[in-house]
Image (cartoon, rainbow, N blue to C red):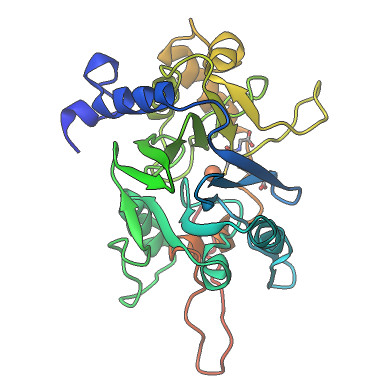
Amino acid sequence: MSASHHPETGGSRDAALASASAQIAATSRGAAAVRAFFDPATSTISYVVHDPVTMRGAVIDSVLDYDAAAGRTSTGSAQAILDHVRGEGIAIDWLLETHAHADHLSAAPWLRETVGGQIAIGEHIREVQAVFGEIFNAGADFRRDGSDFDRLWSDGDRFAIGALPVTVLHVPGHTPACVAYVIGGAVFVGDTMFMPDYGSARADFPGGDAGTLFRSLRRILQLPGETPLFMCHDYLTEERQDHAWETTVAAQRTANIHARDGISEEEFVTRRRARDAGLAMPRLLLPSVQVNMRAGRLPPAEPNGTVYLKIPVDRL
Ligand SMILES: N[C@@H](CCC(=O)N[C@@H](CS)C(=O)NCC(=O)O)C(=O)O
Ligand SMILES: [Fe+2]
């Protein structure tokens, strides 16, 4: 990654951001069809985005349902995505992950089998694989070079979904590998910011960093004010009991409780660290990470044909 692409440098020398801004300005409103799928078990929002002209599409951050007590996976959430894709007649080219999720298993491999598409994530997934490969004592058969994924993105990478241009922004902080997808005129922000009244994602996972998260989040907020932003989670607030996942750059700059205009990096970091100190680990952290670091595939079955997930004791 060149210095001019690095999120920390920001400002006018940020070529990837300039490219994303130009793309947004050149895209007519509503060019991308967006359908959201809310998973109540993990408060995750998955998206199907497609180009209504060519009917090519992408799935972002799909969920494989997991009953931790029973050790059982199921595909109700992913089936809803599949039904939408088939019902609309969308040809899926991409199964996009914003990061290696720590709270749910990805359904990307199941969707790859059923609707097709290539599984893609940010190139810094290698750092996540190195850290968690060691924590899970994953052994030599676990490849830590990102090659379990079909495609790894660098900051500023561009591709297309049908006629919709896409720019990838590396937005680390919540995890080292987080990316945001600028698709046509909208941004799928992953776990960077949440709705204005909830603020931001936690930054206390291995490889996470609050200052880095602040710079990533503020980088996205340099995009044009009217740009729609789609969240990856919504956990509600005391005042708001209806789930919401869409806002704009301008709304975040005015009202985000952690990172609106005028809040310094130092203030953000102090507040973020204080909040993170009181958060419990996500309920599905251990099952999720050991699966998602393998691009959503389960570990290999043991000789009796059963797949086992590991629980590292007293490690986290
Ligand atoms: N209670 C949820 C929490 C999940 C969680 O920690 N989510 C991350 C994103 S992966 C986060 O940033 N949470 C912010 C917060 O809980 O305030 C669970 O157990 O799944
Ligand atoms: Fe996350």
